[in-house]
Length: 236
Picture 1 (cartoon, rainbow, N blue to C red):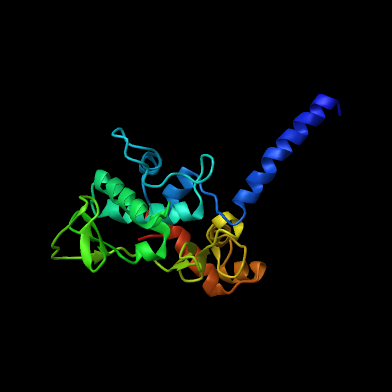
Picture 2: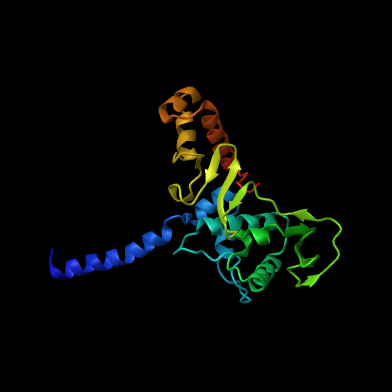
């Protein structure tokens, strides 16, 4: 190896090492993967990750270079619930900006202290703060007749209150420390997509034997992947 080639190699390694350190335990999802998992249009995910034409900040800025972390995925899941409930995007952006300023959390939609307070009423984005309900999109307090809590299936949080893992279905977990956050059979490193693909060819009993799983786990993986293909999404 010539000296210039050696220099280029060391330079590349110097870039990759901190990147690898940053990705460990973070989870990695591109916009298409996030769209598939959350049953959201990919154009929404891309649009939400950048400032709008009025200069309002992103709903969920991607933590990684052209990719989303697990915490971003959870934040997008909450944003998706708001979107499905017809909360206006400008209200969503104003609300998240308000929450960032009030709490100091860069990604408030993935923090337990915030998520536990969120709800919608009609198309209003609201939160229970300081003993009252506040319309986050409009920046003020209001009276609400019907309050529907934001709910994501079985998010677990770490000691700092940040989303740590997501169990959207029986025997299925997304953990950024396991297979970069790919949905896996709980307690293993086996992606549900792999199990479901094998189950299309062989019987659940044979797949279970080959992968050292239970038949119940195989059927759970197949059902989970089928639900994703049907557009249900893990936040449904």
